[in-house]
Length: 230
Ligand code: BG6
Ligand code: MG
Image (tube, rainbow, N blue to C red; front, side):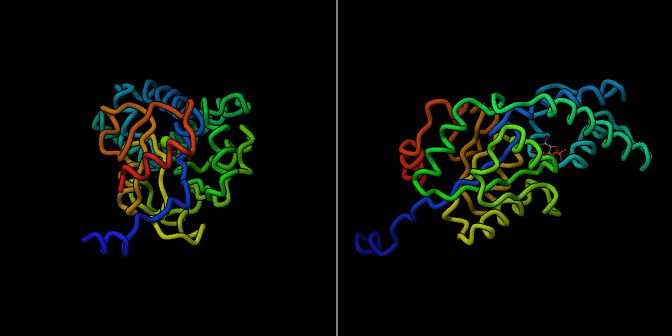
């Protein structure tokens, strides 16, 4: 058995794939505010607990989820109009963002990752991902950037992370995902990748490890967690 162990050593971690909203920047709250404005107009009850199910979920699928909450339907024109208005409200929040809005610990962690030669990719469902990264001036860290404009099947489908690994020309088991959404953790697992959940343990219990944020997080700690996962 011992020999077998040496023949099949744990693979080294080669890349980190980051979700954007709620992991790198607190746009998850802006999404909630924009959906809340729409659901108030449509008289749909919508809570922060419901919002956990929208994290990582595409704009279209999110609206379907919200309409289902109240058993409502919209005409195709009203559906498109609702999506458009929600995005306009979301973009108004984005327009106020500055580099100071990157989540605590993220710029330092990205810088340390880069300095150690770790590969870095983005795997976001958002069609606004590039715009948001530009606003917080972190685009240069990402070697590969996969967003909602490049994928057909949204999280929990694995596509966004599979494309990330493909862009890096790495195997899935060499990559680790950082995610704040239930759908995103499922997407990582569907891609055969380990996932670190950013947020609450009770919400993200299916993740391979959960931490509240990146404050004080280092590449050394990441390597320890990676070893414990295998
Ligand atoms: C995800 C968010 O990152 O992007 C979801 O967690 C959002 O809440 C999805 O619906 C799509 O984003 P956008 O910016 O294209 O509406
Ligand atoms: Mg997210």
